[in-house]
Length: 592
Image 1 (cartoon, rainbow, N blue to C red):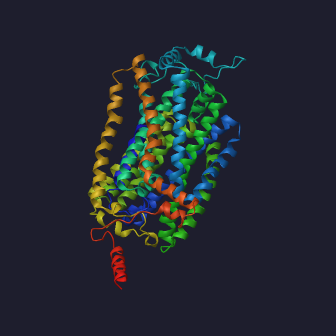
Image 2 (image 1 turned 90 degrees about the horizontal axis):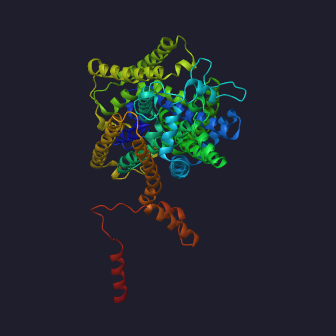
Image 3 (image 1 turned 180 degrees about the vertical axis):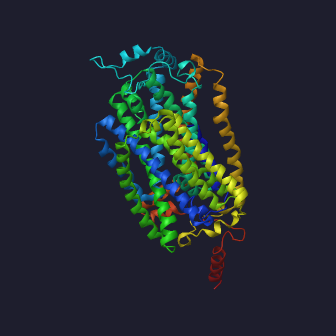
């Protein structure tokens, strides 16, 4: 969870450090490192888009099926159409505008759930007592609690492993849920960081947002966005996540892995209203993220494949047509692909852990090529593919060693997934460093990067003086680097370390933890809702002015009023050019 808070910040730093305002995607930034490098990182970019969209659909379809009874396959196929319809028509601009409203609704539901759990229905002390009670039960008592009316227990699965949250937690300090000393928690944290490194650096959806923003906006926006985003896993896990365990709801590990904890708790606490709220929240999240992924795939195919390899002189209209076709095809493909994944027995949690195994090997080579002038393009290709192959082999071998068999269940174990993730990111980094340092060192000139990227129809809109100002880029980099690394240090090291001496949280310590999560959730909701309106008040005023002029019948097109920007003044440009001439002509007329 924590890594996702600061990784977008790091990504934004590198966007603004390349002196390449004419770029479209991360893979185009390495295009002149060789065709093989370009195609290699295109492959990993597509993998990231497919994996992220798969997780959306797997979790979304499972939740829709659980709350409404709709057939899973039908839900998987219909959900993408909510994304296709407006994304194919509106493009990136529609995605930006819609994402603001989607995010506001998501945070509205978030603070509603926090309020219900810790203020309206329960309190931190009550949840604390319930969690203590949960781990106090013996295996026999747990089997009796989780059994049918006929006396058949479903506490253990066919392999003898417990599937319900009851009794002490293996690997946790004193078996408690109220601790940061957790073996599984540590493994999940490392897997999470590796996987999210992959999504942030390889997924085009992150790049396109930073590319489209002004340098100062990207730097501050990514930092603030990361802080606000952290409220979603932090506050939701502290409220709905802990409530499900404290109340001992009959949610097995498979259902939890499919993302069914929030809807189960919301339905338990609020009935049908809770189910509706979670469905709305889910739909907003799927449409918002799904549209970004669709635009990312369409951009990669339109710019990196169609324009670079098939039609170098493609016009904006042709690229737009290709993009729209790709969005529709990608949505249909992902609906069918998610159905196939579910048929194989894979759920949201399994795919999430597997993400770093697939795309982790692309992270360090891509980072090196964007920041290190000695980085070898050929070495990056070798490192990325070698890391990928080694990760798959290590992942399979780890499952065989740990369980004696290879199956969906054994491959999804934390220890096995951790092995694959670490091999992917570490082996590729080592291979690329050694190859670039000792085998094929380069001397790449980053100042030539922008000259090798050509705009479609030489369209310079959005590339004003600020976007091409080297001093502005350096200031943005300095601003975000200092704060980004400080935030990284606090969240990754300081916060967990300060929680270790507590070992098992006391009642007052847990109350403070809950208070921080509530404050973070409400603070993020207020910031994410009001700050964009405040920062865009000039543009919003211009839009309403144009609408008013249109309604009142004033001359001019309403769109002119909405989109028009005052021309930038230069030192040599006079304030008034025509008025003095008019005055002289008037004087001559009077004299005559």
